[in-house]
Image (cartoon, rainbow, N blue to C red; front, top):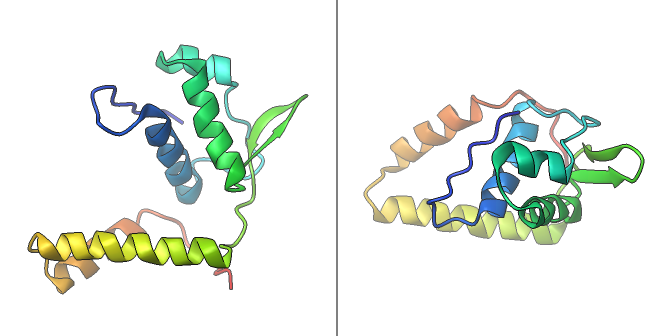
Length: 129
């Protein structure tokens, strides 16, 4: 997977990396069990500090999306279903994004089309209940 890090962005680099890994997992570019580059290796490849990579990896480990084995390295985990707290946070974030788009003139129809286009980028998965 190739990471596109924007050093001039207002968004922290670890956050950009974290989000790109999440999207990569959701799109199927990164499969459960697949090893990620080591912190040092990735830091050298994209030219950023090892602590930045470590922060992104640790955040994803806390979310249950990555696992680390001292002998094998860091791998993609099988994503767990949302906890009730994560579900509430997801809905709150989605509500804020939708409200922001509506305030800036997006119609409900345009929003639905945007969501459908974005969803089409991801493979079908069995729904978790």
